[in-house]
Length: 384
Image (cartoon, rainbow, N blue to C red; front, top):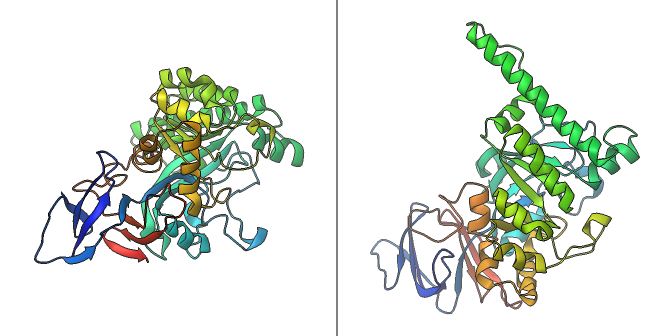
């Protein structure tokens, strides 16, 4: 099947916007340019419309904190043990969550869904596209990261509520270190068993995923708001030599040079909302401008349901008031999260060979009057 989007204002993201056409064939972008033609394609008139790649949110809880149902269907935190590395969001994701349709209405097509931040070691995340009602058919990559957390949340859940470790920041760091030391011991035991020509039968699902982290097959995705928590996360990552992405990074702007020197990517946000706890007191939109000017690879999250995904463009547009550049902001929900998630060979920009995740807007997304009229994922219309 071929589709030819004709005469729209195209924002490829990795190159300058222009008025032109996109030819889609077999779910991928076949050609992009001016005055394209095809005898086999369905022509879609884009005159006066704005064409963007689907937005990507690299940190979301959509589908595991279901909208409009109260606590009975909130499956994002397994708050029974500080270490729950074995749990997978894939097993709790609800494709009928009403928020998904609204996310498409906001131009969002791809998400990294992660467990919440109750536990120092929270569980396994998955990259999903909103293209099916069967979660297994939505998967881009799974597992795609091990969610971890520092700061106030583990302290509150375990120290205040359960009266057990971790009750402090130093306790949280100790729990994380102890876990990865167990993983190292487990890997050594497995290696020795296999060297002896024996079958390794003592499979531990909690440690298997940690092995993937230490082998750098997937990154650790560490929740850290305060600057000192960010530094702690980096310190532990260096001790155990694993890849790291900092989630939230509220105070990253305070130590931007240090983060740049360590080459650590950030998923910032959410920034549009109430400062609900002490570690958010210095949250501000100037962080976006500072982080981008330092050349740090950064994406912008909604942290759905904290900010519903349908308001992605509203959060982005608001940042313009604080000096952020339009080009940088658009990259923070397209090519940058794609790079952080290591799926930029497939999505994140409108380029030949990439999957045709295309969003048709009535106007520029930063114009609050603009609406999403149509959404295509891999060349198939899923909204509008």
